[in-house]
Image 1 (cartoon, rainbow, N blue to C red):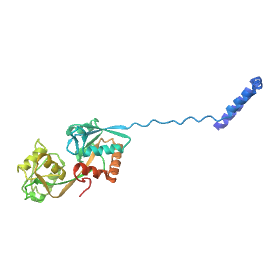
Image 2 (image 1 turned 30 degrees about the horizontal axis):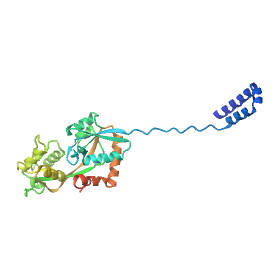
Image 3 (image 1 turned 90 degrees about the vertical axis):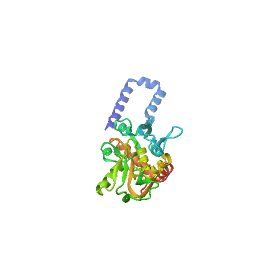
Image 4 (image 1 turned 90 degrees about the horizontal axis):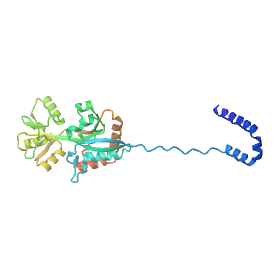
Length: 291
């Protein structure tokens, strides 16, 4: 209908111009012919609009930078380690995002995430009910740590958790290991005495176990290897795996899109073998699968 109206308007205009300018038309036939040809020629196509490339969304990644081989500063002052290099690999595979690291005290990372000062937290985080109530965890674990009984290297009497009856077991208050040990004690009639480490944290655990004030703790083979190497902890792992801890990225509740993209990237990194390679490079063996 719109095309028909346009055609009628053009025809009417032609009659008007024919009546008013007959003399000009007769005097300048060549110009009129050119004008007619120009009118008949199709209009030149407008150049296609090109949209500007979309700017990548900046994501501030909070981490401690103090966890040896996981997130730490090397001798040149560069932030590196397993968690850091994995996060960089994820960044490479997400063109819509640009990751930027920000180091801080471990205790402040999740506080900063909650306050919106960082957008993503990476520092070997496990899921617990308190964290889950406040934050969003991605679905694909990037570490699976086996926890075992740990004793002094010269201890030959404790070979599994069954041998801890009547003995002292130390752990860090509030840790997932503490929760597991408390649940085990409760279900099994409190076979051992549970002792909590002091303000020295890991160093207190090392000292108490080395001096014989306690008999055991629970930890992962990776952590024991690191303690023996860096602090002469004189520890060894014994017995079967007690439980496994899965490690995830932590986000704010509203970051569902970023969570999905991180999961997709981790699945790719697992599938092509990059995750296992990074684990062996930084952690000594493949801690990305269960035993």
